[in-house]
Length: 334
Image (cartoon, rainbow, N blue to C red; front, side):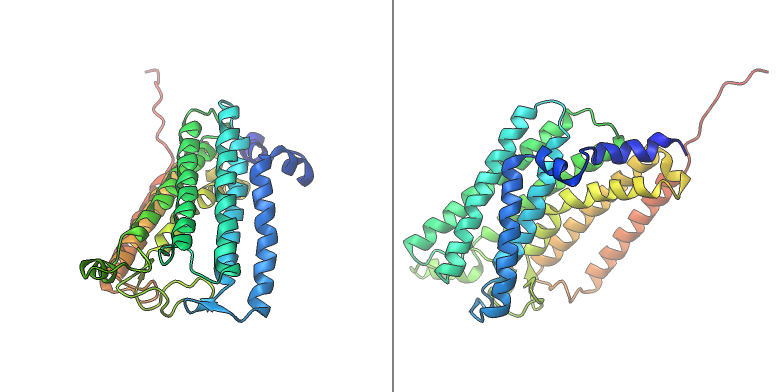
């Protein structure tokens, strides 16, 4: 196998020398955000062990724990993506900085509202203070959405060293932007909340993540995803982490090229990334459809299972076609 296939691809992904130097080369505000999330993660883990308070039938430290993991991973990934820019680096720096400030402010308000005030954060309209905090957090989230979308546009104009890597970055950030947008589904008033308005009252919350039931029912350990109804947090979660999943797919394919010569072809690896992106988009659509029908992730019905089987079959066919060698037509002398 040619040296360049595996070596150059991985070098393009991790070409900053030792770990300390790599960290210094990444976007500093995003790395500060990631470091803060690491601290919050440790504090939240400790809180889960020693603090027995609950909020909406879940440990009060569960939300900071989950958000610390998700935001920390997202910040690290975005910092890495911005380090790959060859054009518009200054614009990219500002996009990352605005993202870090917006999400950092959101996380500060999350800890203040949930841990120190002992009140729910999202959808809370019970008091003017709750409403102000909820609206401020929503503004920060929309800002992060806009910054991620702008990074997608920047990546479209980059000349990256490996086409499979380039495809994974572009599709990963694009699907992550869609995943961020799926959060909008949670902000629509529920039928019960609409009934309160119709009766001349004012609901204490507007929106919710559970479909078919009120928020706060039985859920999966730590994740909290409803085991009794649909949960819109699932497609949101799956979507935003496409930004890690697809680049990891490209990295894994490059690593496997040492053992499987068929993957030494950049064209084959790019096809597989496209297949992975299509499959990931299908998964996002599937879990969104399931949640909107009020169906728990742990209790799929026949149609959900049939759709999942169809998706697996399509992806498997895509993988098989991607691995087929390209036909090369050459002129021969007669």
